Amino acid sequence: PSCDVMAWAAPWLLHYRSQQQAALTRLHPHMDNQDEQHIHPPVLLDLPGLASVDCMFPAISSLGFSLHGMFVLLGTTDARIHIYAVSTGSLVATHAFSGGRIQAAALAESLNLGKAQGAGPIILAATADAKLRLRQLGGANIGR
Image 1 (cartoon, rainbow, N blue to C red):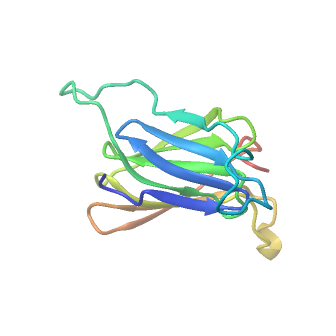
Image 2 (cartoon, one colour):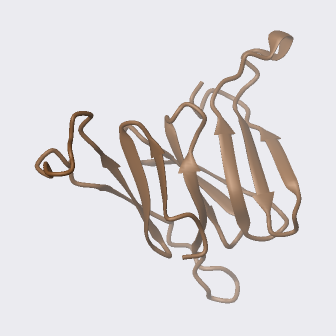
């Protein structure tokens, strides 16, 4: 894979399965190395099936959790970040960026920014052109 193969936000383990799929597994907090019966079946997070203009399917290029662990972020080679709710595994938003493949992504669901409090979540994207892009998301649709 061209990205990290796993991320952790207790009690969730996120791991890379294929170019178009990641898996989200809830681990039992008291599980030891010998006890696999407490492993829940994974929730599969599939990339939306949209091919690009040149008929190439995008691949996962970064994966991780949001600041508070409420969302999974899958960055792709077509400069998009797909945001999934951890609680349901559902795709809740997709954001496109310029600058090429997403190398890393971060989402702060809520921040205490003084006068700007309640202004909406912030998403950061590091892209292939070595630039960091910041976008403030409007409305209450992402973790507000």
